[in-house]
Amino acid sequence: MNKKASQTRIVVAIIFGVLIIDQIVKIWIKTHLSYGEEFLILGQEWARIHFVENEGMAFGLSFGGAWGKLILSLFRVGAAIFLIYLIRSLIKIGERTGLLVSIALIFAGAVGNIIDSIFYGLIFSASTYHGDPAVLFPESGGYGSVLMGKVVDMFYFPMIDTTWPEWLPFIGGDRFEFFRPVFNVADSAITVGVFLLLLFYRDFFKSKKEK
Image (cartoon, rainbow, N blue to C red; front, side):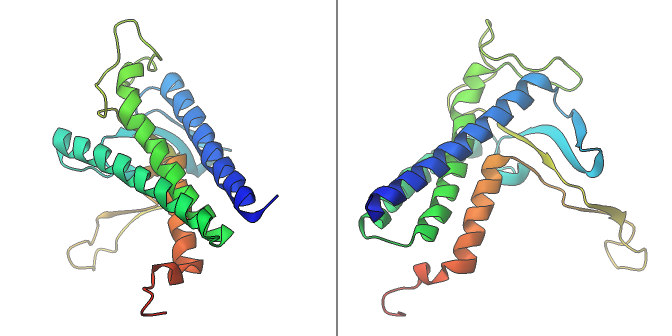
């Protein structure tokens, strides 16, 4: 097997592996938990499955209401198309496998959340606090339209939950929690991919003139 074929198989395996795991976890969470419901992972207070949804960016961040949601969804689709082109180009010129793995993780994570945005509003009923779990393919139709689905998040690791010392200006006595964001498998793939790029492949971003 030549290098290009081997790299292609690795990239495809990473992308499909991340997408399958991401969607299995999200669908299970959506159809088994009500909004805001949680349980501990292996009995640990600092490691929890906590079901929430977000309409915007990764790690539960928001972006400008309905129009912001639509713009962000379209941006994600455009970014995913660009990443496909980039991966194909890098395989063609025989770039390093590690670099391709990093970009494949970012691509898979982006597509994982794109799937939520495009389809989840069409195929799921709405999740509510203290209500029944959502239904997949409800007879009455989904809770939203194309590109307006909510991204499902579930991993929550509040490893530190305390308050700032009273003597600190402005924030004294306020609650401090680390790590506060709730995220999903797709977010994790993007984070790992970006981390690998910055740690091992920063030279990829250098211009030819700098090199």
